[in-house]
Length: 289
Image (cartoon, rainbow, N blue to C red; front, side):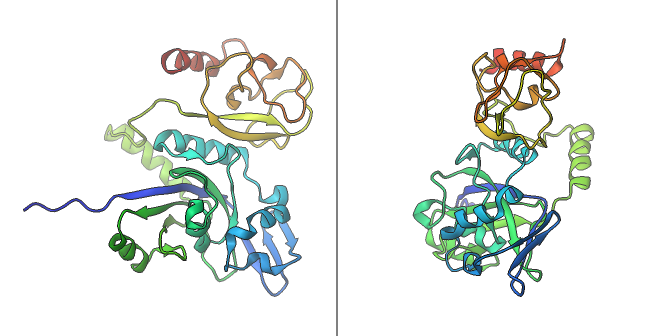
């Protein structure tokens, strides 16, 4: 008899952490990281007893300093297009959580988490104490199994489970950007092997929404700009009233005012002559969208 196929692992959520961990000091009741320090009014919200109940309060305390950046949304959109994972919300949740809380929080609501869908992509702002493991821009997946025995094996052989034992965390706690990129290039160039996906159809775009009023004549910056909110939305053809894939606006000039809370559309942008991104996207839209 041949070997029987193993149990199927269901990816409930995949994602990455923000590059800089948030280090909580219980002695001073403060969070310290590369951008500064925040005093915490109530240490209870960092209790691990029920982290899902404190997500909104943690986000409110961290404010913009704990928010996801445009380049993070860009990376996750590339990953979503490559993996088939989808955003649970177009702004992404980006909860402020400890590594051990990831399988508890980034799980479906029926398992005690915050997700409305299964098979999603998201980001975490990693919270830890000085003696706890961090993520440092690393990646993770939260998984589930189809039978009780498989779940038992996963949750008792070193993976971090949720309290119910219905989900588990697999993660890589570092971001080796100086190693990963050249390896990918070498594998593709020397071995002629794909390092991405076999399904290259576009599913999602990064689009921009003004966080403050933008004026005609302003030049749009890159995905580090603070005056724009970045969202992951289903890919649409470039059309006058559709939200424009953000990087097509990068470096171009606004032809009209954009009120706060309004998406940047193609009709609001004066593209440069022979802009290669606009040319390529026109070809892509004709072929796929």
